[in-house]
Image (cartoon, rainbow, N blue to C red; front, side, top):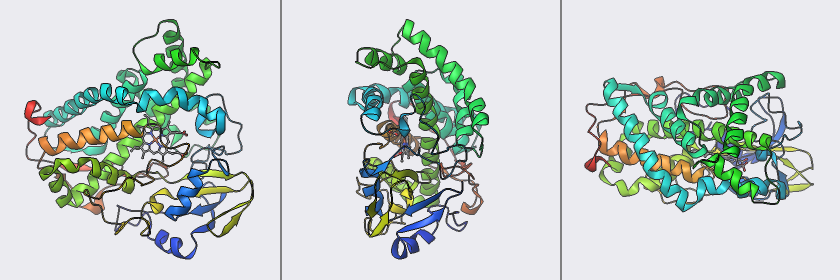
Length: 403
Ligand code: HEM
């Protein structure tokens, strides 16, 4: 459902009515797929939390993207469409690269340096910028490049691939052609790291997998790296840009963070509650069952409206208000259950470091145009602004006081 122009900070108000009148409703999706649309927090959590009754075999966004055929056989390494033990084989080896305290502690200084450098670049460029294109995309691209172990200079390959994945390409051959340059590149990378492991994510995944009973093939590794690169940067860049857009439009919230940086962790959760989750995630029913009071049958598709669930007043008080002091830990912006976001700790770290440095170094940061003029992306599951024009009076230098 399209977002209303008058309020760019929330899903369509029709969801409020659906949650009450038809919380599990039969819909025709943009790709033509028929599915049950689920919008209540408790129901969405139930679906995402039960991978035995609700399979991920569909892929995440077949309701939005014409090329994402839910019936297509699962390819080697396409772990986002796997269930059970088949899936856990991947999670076990990738998880440590993006979630352990040790890895995050190593990542923090890298992310701090990336963010400081991008703020310096804003200062050098003048007194206005597009916060999305000039800031959040480069920051999250550099971060995910570092996590996987792909040089930042080669980012265009996965930017182009992500643009294709989140585009309205409908045919399989077109999609394969769009992904080929990234896959070819990653194949060379995987071969090189197998022969000569480095201190990077790909090498460590290869080494861990080689020590296991069922090592990954080159093609599996290529697919895994491609998913990480494509899933890792624009989701974070868009949530961050959308979140800052909201904080600057409700500027008292930005001022609150400046006065009380201890609120930054809760601000990060609030941004993900309000702007995470993308345009919902799909699942397939594995056996006849119920969602809430509604019977659903084996083989049918389900789409969970995550952003609507995260605005459910049964779960969150005054849910449409963005409140950086809100104390929550149970939003669904990173999903829930078995397939919950791999990169959530990485994303949290990126959002935290960005907010820490922005409130210190750019206290006068503000929107450079009226809220209604901020353009939005169209035909993509990664919902958010296409640009966030911002301006400022002064950018304070980085350094001791600015970290
Ligand atoms: C604010 C930023 C982000 C948001 C809102 C977000 C959101 C999500 C959601 C809702 C899912 C669940 C999909 C499902 O249940 O089928 C997911 C999965 C995933 N995310 Fe994120 N994500 C973010 C950042 C990242 C980052 C930085 C990475 C990489 C380091 C990443 C990698 C992944 C991967 C690989 C999956 C698939 C997991 C699976 O199917 O098991 N994400 N993400």
